[in-house]
Length: 80
Image (cartoon, rainbow, N blue to C red; front, side):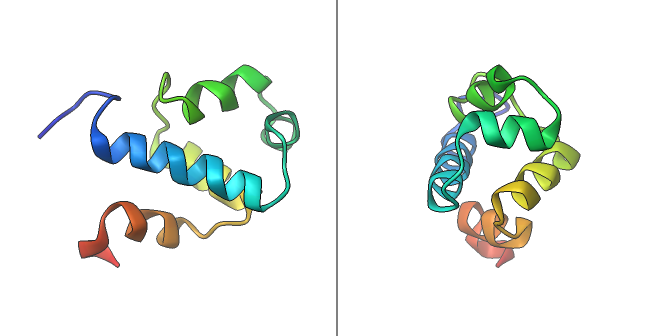
């Protein structure tokens, strides 16, 4: 099991989060504001420089309007 934030699975999740934010018509600043964090937090997780824990991921998914189950099933099809 690859534990790095640079794993293919994690990079795929980062792309999905970025794409979902774009589809929602939100900027990083808007997402950060709704999460109560600095814009750099959003930039760092979208670029793969920061790993989100499951609770943070749930909050991000809610803000960008993408169900957590859909995101996870796109990264891990066996759980869909």
